[in-house]
Each structure stands twice: as C-alpha cells, then as structure tokens.
Image 1 (cartoon, rainbow, N blue to C red):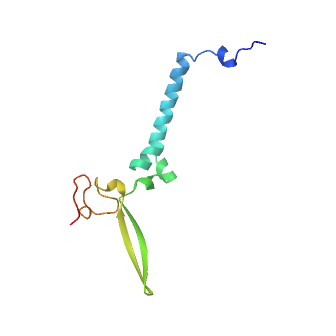
Image 2: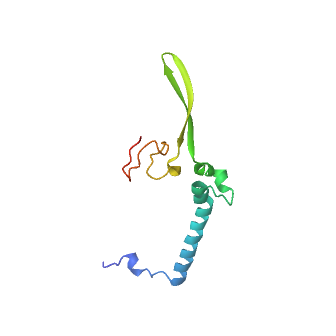
Image 3: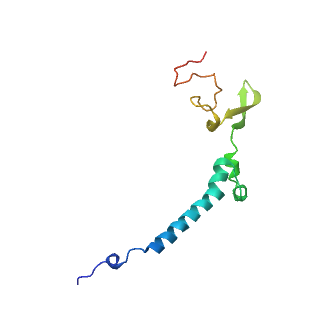
Amino acid sequence: MNKTPASADAQPASSKRLVVGSIAAVIVAVLLLVTVVLPAQYGIDPTGAGRAMGLTALSSSGTITFEVTDVIGGNEVIRTVEIADAATQPRGIPAGCKPGSVGDAERGDRPQ
C-alpha cells in the first residue's frame, strides 16, 4: 500500500545529457536568430529565409504612406500623407510629428 511516486525513483540527469541539451538549445537559438530575428528586426537576411517568409518587409520602415480622401461640400480631394515611424523619430518627439513642431518634453520647450 505504500507506493512511492515515480519521480522519487528517477535518477537526476547526467552531466552528458545536460551538456547535449544545452548545446541543442544554443543551436536552435542561433538558427532562430539568423532565420527570423535578424531579417524581421534589422533587415539582415544571410539565408534568404526571411525574404521567403516575408519578414524583411517588417524591417523596412522609415515612413508610413497612405492616401486620405477629404470630402468637403461634395468636393473630393485625395492627398498623400506620410508619417514618420516611431523607431526613426528623435527621442522626445511624438510619432508622426516633425522635429520643432512640438516641444521637447524633457526640456520643457513649447512649440513656437
């Protein structure tokens, strides 16, 4: 009636198994870095896998361009609007704003 759980009988992992498991984890991490992270984040695609999966398009930022249709009094005006990506904006400037158009929050400046 007194049974011990199966985990109590299990032996701890040997050093060899720990080393092999650690090496396998490092290999998987490097493969993911080269095939997924670098193409998506930085546009670096040494294997071509990022382009095949469409990940390099994620890194091509800078400005976002879209068309806006203004309808005022029955007149349609289509204009193109470009908004700077938040990653390329200087620190303290809200996304989509040009430097100098808003105050720098850290210095307490106000727009003129």
